[in-house]
Amino acid sequence: MKLKDKVAIVTGGGSGIGRAISLELASRGADIVVADLNLEAAQAVAGEVSALGRRALAAKVDVTSSQQVKAMVGQTIKELGHIDILVNNAGWDKLEPFIQSIEETWDKVIALNLKAPIICARAVLDHMIEKKAGKIVSISSDAGKVGSSGEAVYSGCKAGVVGFSKTLAREMARYGINVNCVCPGPTDTPLLRTLMGTEETANKILQAMVKAVPFKRLAQPEDIAKAVAFLASDDSSYMTGQSLSVSGGLTMQ
Image (spheres, rainbow, N blue to C red):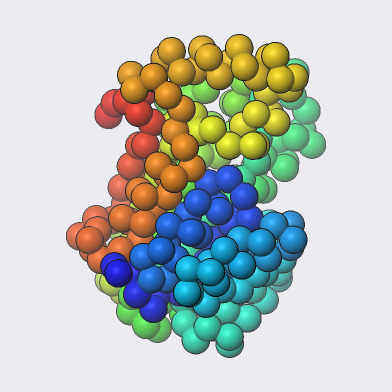
């Protein structure tokens, strides 16, 4: 098992892509901290991790709060001994034309998609620097590379995550810490369907998305999780500052 006895924090780990990442890393031998604002969801995923024979910790945490994130990191070290991997997965969006959006929405999108990964990275870095090892994988988006209609602020945040990660990768390389991004294309998650409004509207949008993807299907959360697992493992030890697209060929760079 490539990640045997590693300890990974997965933010937003209680559902969708985060759940898939938690289970994929656990299947490869990692112990998992399922960090989520929804404690019941985090506990459910932690139970699934335990069923795979790995240690699991469910943590209720608002990743936009430095205080709560620091407390979660401290709890992880106390209960699981160390931190090897941070996966910045938590995020949120609201699909709408930019000129119809309001500042309250911008603040929430920026806090969850840009500020939170910065907060979480800072919270684990002292520990990783002391160990002279660590993997930080942030879920960005192909929207951050090419833009996405109805997601102006979200796209800006995801581009910011890539830029932040590249700079952090340069600064942390001397400590043996790898920092990379996974950039999903459209992924079939409950959140995606919720953002699209009515079921009829969602189906129309999803059909259009499928037509645009060369593989003629949306990504599944497990597709993203496998890419994260690669970047979290020693198989990617000579990769840092990279943004890996997982989009079925929708974007090719």
